Every structure is written in C-alpha cells, then in structure tokens.
Length: 147
Figure 1 (cartoon, rainbow, N blue to C red):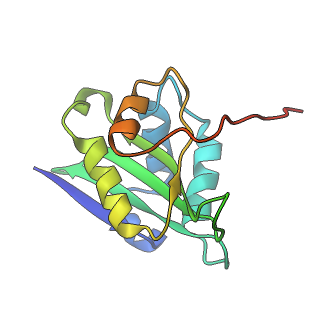
Figure 2: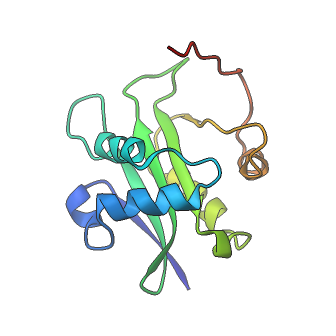
C-alpha cells in the first residue's frame, strides 16, 4: 500500500531520505528529462528555506520502506503572471509508473498549496498527458536566452 508523506521541514524528511538520496532518486527517476543532482539539491534547499519569499514542500510516495515517488513544490512569494507555486519536480520510479502514484502526489500537492501552480514540461515528455488530465494547461511558450 502506497503512503503519501508531506514534508515542509528538512529535519522531518531526513527520517526517510537525506537531501542527497532524494536528489539522486529524482535524477534517476526523471531520466531522460533529468536535471543534474546539484541543481536538484538547489531546488530542495529552496523548498526547505526559512527565508521570506522562499519555501515549499516535498511529498514522498512510499511503498513499505522504499521511496517510489517524489514531488518538490516551491513557493514563489509572488502572484499573477508568476504564480505562487512552482511544481519543480515530480518523479515516479520507472517500474512503478502507471499505477496512479504521480496523479495522487499531484492531488496531494493541490491540497497543500494555496493559489495557482505552474510547471515546466518538455513537449515530448509522456508525463505531459498526466498533467493535462490533472488540469494543467499550456498558457505560454517558454523562451530563454542562454549565455
């Protein structure tokens, strides 16, 4: 049976996973759309920050003693064009996909978040269909100037 655990303090999370373990889980489970481990660590640091205008939370999906899914939500401290929440990472262990774990984590994140939620997804990422089923809509095309 899958349990969904919410963490807004790093100390509470560490009973289940260290930031390094969680970063490596996300890096591996997000493949081939993964970010580098150090960038994932930066996201976790932001999520657990006590600095005003920062913060967020993590949701873990656990099956017995194993993490099978993870979600990282950031609070932006903003509203309007930049929504108050950014779903930074969501990943399900590859051999556990298709069981509703991702959708359950997103529904739990909806309950734990105030205001709108934004996420970035590659056009060719199969998870895009899940996000659309959950109510996410493409409103803007993201453009970046890379140095």
